[in-house]
Length: 130
Image (cartoon, rainbow, N blue to C red):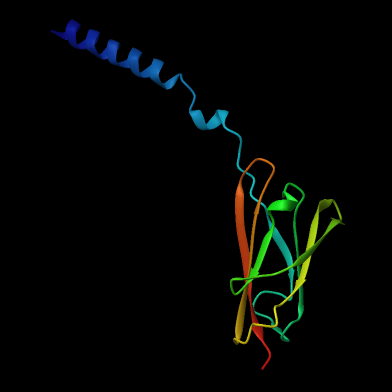
């Protein structure tokens, strides 16, 4: 009886050890690097005049043709410049708030895709001077 229990335990341990020997599939996948939004001006929750200029930086892995910027869901035309800030390289995106915005607050939304096909979103909120 003890020999059968010992044999069953040995078989179970050997099967579990071989099952744990296989690596997970996630280790073979590339990490998703999303586009970043940094150094937004005016800053988040700052007060800004209507139709004011805004800008932010995004990472160099961002595909330029994929960049879309909206202010309160209104598309915004932006200019894109290559930029270096210290050891960081990327792009400076700048534009003006649309004249159609008459609300007290405006949300600037940013969507883009990186070179490894990862989509990222970001944004910030501004208070409009009345």
